Image 1: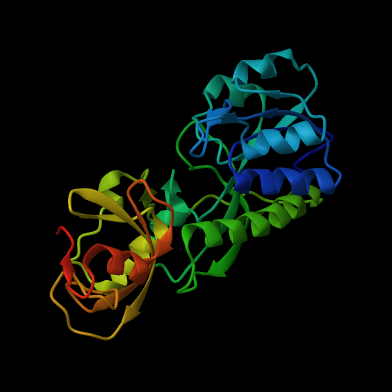
Image 2 (image 1 turned 30 degrees about the vertical axis):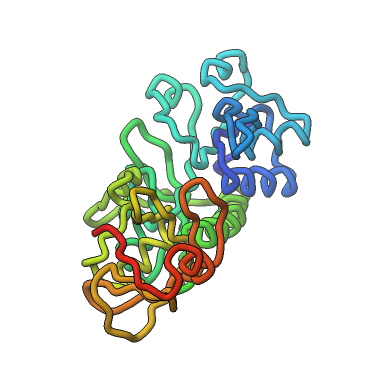
Length: 292
């Protein structure tokens, strides 16, 4: 067995990682320590709050730290489980503690920081989860198991990540329990899921409606109008012929190939709202032009 009597230290931060941590605890694995990112300001109030992973650890009485140096205090054999930790783990730590990573892609496709977003942006038909060895190099370790899922046309990065976290939790437990599991070296040409930038989020209305729809579902896509950002939270591909970036009172906007009907938007400094209601408040019956 991979776990071979070792106790587990868990490294992760967001909700997807918390889902997997909770599953390990419920499945009877002994988690002796959690390392996560420091408390951060979240939401409009600016109040500091714990990460989703820390909240699970505290609820179950597991010690928590924000620094890998905390591992130096453990003498017993450990196994590290890493899920969306967000930091490179130094070779000196890996020499002492073997670690497994739950990675949300079908490696070697989409190694790196944003595999879910990049899979949607690229129009991939499927993605999945891999359980792999953590190495000092980026997502290059041998794979112990994987599971696949189709990417639905309705999937956002949030819904897909939630599904992958649930699948990954079960897969990880199965791999840890297996009496004999073999590591398989990654085969194929790797692609890299670089961190999402503002350029990835900015909508170019001369692109196709199909691509912009994927952009809206994958990242926090935005456009600009009257000198202010407008986040496009939800849209639907529709038939129609309208000038590029031209938006009518029906909330249909023209693209370089096809049209989109805006469903939900968040104007700068305002909460999410119905797109048609926002447009009526902006220009009545007259079309407006988003920035290209």
